[in-house]
Image (cartoon, rainbow, N blue to C red; front, side):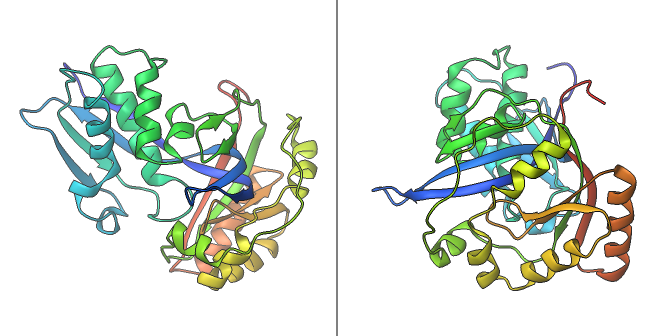
Length: 291
């Protein structure tokens, strides 16, 4: 390749998450409204004599050994499906917290698949990309084409892209990693819930819709990491918030606001009060070219 290829790996936000039940293989059937934030890891692929991965950025030290990273697992998964696949040196700038419920590792793996597709002149619609994504992890398929969707099954069933409004938001992580398996170990099955149909495209209607669709894993995550409850309380105390929720299996939580100014003010306040928290004002959702 002549020049490095850059791919962003945006944070995946579960605006809602419903656990439908446990399957015979031990995995849980889920239904989740997923959107993506404009805060992201950054992945570069450049030519090199040997395949390698270098990790930098504020969360590099917590990312574990490079050999175990999902970027290299994505390379192996695609190489197993495409003979003669060209790769090289991956440079990952890790800006998102690790084991945080916002799909950072999955987004990185998906970015690696997109970069490899570009380097090898493979169409992003090539079914081998999606089969590779499914083999890596449950959240990788939805991150492969990072647009708002309803995700079902164990992550393999995706709706067509949804036209969600831009949602000014604040993301907060209390600085504690939380494994998904630990949350499900504490999860008690819940009854009821509504199907995710007719997702509104207008801001106020979407907020009302989300108020009826919660995150079923919240109580189990708080049992594992009580600090999540403190994050939720502080976000609810932020002036102008319209909705506060945990993303995925936690511990990252988010608040939605009417405006970017309100979100920025809330983030500034929380940053000044909680120096050990990761706090980020961002935009969730929206469509390309939409103001």
